[in-house]
Amino acid sequence: MSARSKVQRDSGMQRCSRRRAIGLLGAGLAASGLGLLPGCEAPPAVRPVPPPAPPPTSKRVWPPRASYPAPDLADACVLRQDVGIRPYRRGAVRVERDAHAIKPLIHQYGHGGAGITLAPASASDAADLLSEAEVAPPSPIAILGAGIVGMTTADLLLDRGYRVTIYTDRMTPDTTSDIAGGQFAPATVAVGGAERLTRWMRLASDYYLPRAGRGCGVERVVNFTAGGGRALRLLPDDRFSSQALTRLPIAGLEQPGSAHETLLITPPVYLPWLVGRLRERGCAFSFRRFDSASQVAALPDTAVINCLGMGSKPLYSDSRLVPIRGRLVLLKPQRLDYLFSHRNGYLFSRSDAVVLGGTYDRGTTDTTPDPRATQRILERHRRFFGSA
Image (tube, rainbow, N blue to C red; front, side, top):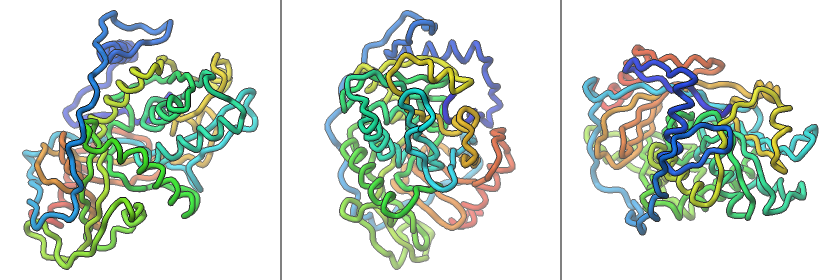
């Protein structure tokens, strides 16, 4: 049970049955060179681990260019609508040891819409808690959940010399992380104070910046904002540049704004790369669903790190977890070379699509695509860019 939504497409694709889903997972893991633990079915064919990433090719994108194209927002460009559930936790992201567990259990969840951004930082704190619990390498550690938080935690624990098994009932491309926008910014999250947020943003940028331009789906980008761009100003200013603009350099726009250098992590590229990296480093994956805390406690591993997101609510009765539904509209790829934020939405120009957001529907878990929502998101962006 991992933190995720059941991704559904406007194309009318029906959800697979549980048996077919398990079969597809096994096939996907085998195709990427992932070995399943005993008791998990998988075809025997195994593809070699991908070769090392190429050397860096991207350069800093600062200062911004003098002009950029406007997006094409025509109906003919629409690919689909993605619907996901953000695991928002009131008060703060939870990174703490469970005092009632019979063996070391560390909770790490509740990142809201900032799972990709903050996963490396919360994972570092979770790893520190393992040390405080006197769980030393190379002890075997169980991680619950194979979204971005779980897999990033596995990556950092491998760095520290632990043996790691990820237990999950779903893998990429079927996690909530797979349908995230991917901008490096602490959006829709309660961190628990400015000091913690500042430290976490530095830890996270330490993790992602060395990956930028290495062919794994992490790139330096410019985000233009109409107005303040308050969240982006939380980026470490010694690593990411920013400036006020008297005129936004996008065709058709005549208003002032600002430009911020940040990162874009493209999930359909980065997550498969991370799976391959983990497998290459010896991380094991076990397809398993947990229906009770006692099932988790019965695992053979020395300690457990819970990265299940919304899945933690029924398993550990966390009343602070709140589902926040987000809808994204994906358009055919366009070479815009920027991100954009305005009062009524945001736009990410990725290699696989132009992503338009978004919605913020608190307290609902219905992930049924709604064509009317697609049109509302499109109309908001069209009004701003003058193409309505």
